[in-house]
View: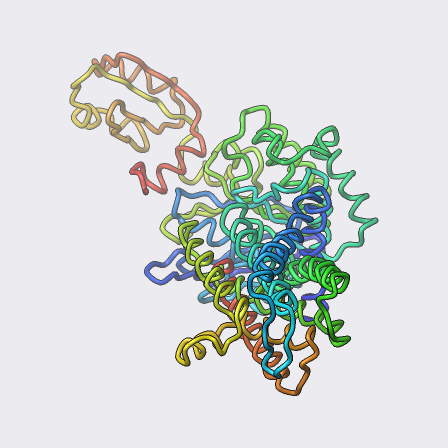
Length: 311
Length: 259
């Protein structure tokens, strides 16, 4: 397979459950060796899409080809070359850390001797070699996550699917996971992940799609999305309690590319915050606090998917 | 291709269970003790009261000879139910073990067959030990008794498959009471302690519908030497229940996990 080959191709991919449409006809191309991200609020269809790519959930419509094979007809053959890190770790609580890897390798039909060698290598890779003979419930959340990642690599997969790989982890554990995932990318493994964390997406993803209500609402590299949907800087203005924010917003609309009124503050999307501040002063606006910051992927995300809670 | 895939998958599931249980040898051995206790308390204790009993073919045997093959069948049933209801339910719903397994090339049928193979292996070891004990105690008057071992494995297979099929319908731990009640009813009324003919005719029909009755009658025929082609009816019944249950289980498990 050539290096820039497409690992996953979805066209009009749809998932319907009895009473609702989880994925409403999406098109995706994941290239070899990249880290591809699915962003979106809860219920946007990310996990349903991941389960279809993982060949554990048959698509209700559209086509899905993975590694050149048809996801619906060649599920087992595709799964043989995928690594999966599910949202819940789903580790085997009756086995030790090392046995979890050994048994998982056997599910792939890997011989015992190869399984033993890979288990030891992978425990080194995720820094769990010293916990090899402990039961899984003795591990911290971060360690379990690393073990789940090691388990996903036991068959030396071409593609690894990670559903919210760092949710619930402390910052140290998150950074360790990111670093290991990046190392996998350097080895040429294609990674597909879902996340709620914008910093994670910015750190890791070469390209990403933002999903909302089962559809893709934006697509591109983090930088492209920032350029397309956000300004370089954002000025956050806070006023006293009961300040008429909507009226205040009218006074500044011409100063920014876009003004957003939040319950407690105004956001001015501007190319350069420092030139905006004197203009505010000229208009006799007296905010109680002013913050100039860079536009982030989080701004893009909230702009695209809205600020209201989805569930 | 799919045959070797199922074989690899069920082999790995079997291996996983072995890995877990080689540490819990005591718990493993305890499964052997239950039917032995029944044999002593009911076979010997009640046998002293009952004395002798007439078999369907007219022969008169000690009560223990009559009840021992039934205990053998019950042990095969209990072992399979314990393994394929309790253990499988917790793997399915609590440990989410099968979700992880289905991310590999293993299919639902591979999981089902692997779990059943394990239950059979376990039940087969218990059955062989119990049968040896019966022989030592002189409770196997016929040489046909050696066929009781494959008979035990067949009963184990039927109940393992039936239990797994039932497990896919279980909604919560409360439903266990139903499982416990059903298996206790079968334990009491499957011509285990008294001949079928002692019941009223309509009860006899109910009893003949239960798989344990067919298991008990099959093993009793073999260990007492009342062998006829009629025994094949029991074999056919047990196989039919097992095959239907297997298909139902793999279908329902696939639908629950691969939706």
